[in-house]
Image 1 (cartoon, rainbow, N blue to C red):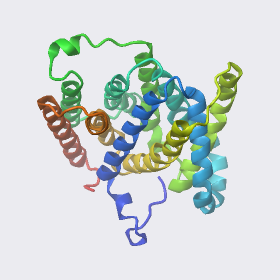
Image 2: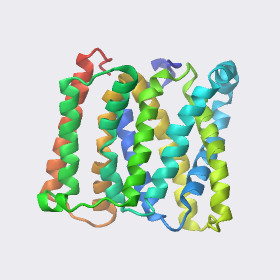
Image 3: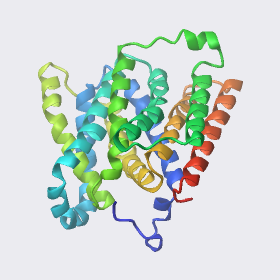
Length: 311
């Protein structure tokens, strides 16, 4: 449970979960592409540490009132917040950036498509919450659409996609993040800003020793134009905005209904490649997009049938 902004306060967007989750997928897709762009140029754990430290400092002035009000709750639920910070902030991001040192952004986006199934498994194991047939059909349909895009509509191409150590790291990161998404329903009743500041700050603390170890190995952050541009984006877009939106989306519709929207990440990733890298639109892009959207629609309708609010 958390504090819900009123519609009269000008936060109507904050009550539109499916739009929030769509924007989240776009921001995270850009983050993965940029993570691959700076691979070998920016140390992965240092990137995660600077990202979350910077995001905390940016958000803190806006969240200070909520933090002061919620301080007793923060103290009372401190170890739960540490768990959420470790899984949703520290481990997931550092491991994902590390994995992108060894695999292509396209592979990273493909691996993200396992997230809805992982979320479903965690919610079943922890809360005994089963997927309805409609939700399962939606997840599978979206997953097929992602595979059509990644494989260029060719079974031979799909069969010859080979995982590497980077893919393994990203899969492990997703298993941890899916756990975060599943237990997010147990978050304490903090305001959205104070909750995010709390887990971001704790995540930064957890990452600090590993960033120092990375620096001791001679992997130092170089503050050139590319690094500064990437840091500016990751501190705000996929950190503050996306996490606020994702947390709110899960709050409104539940983890299983929110998870299929992660299938939009490879869709947005291929679209970014078309727009910025000059790749051409092909039939398999359109077919894949149609399947992903159909799958999300099926999962959304099934979630509504289970009693979630029809936002």
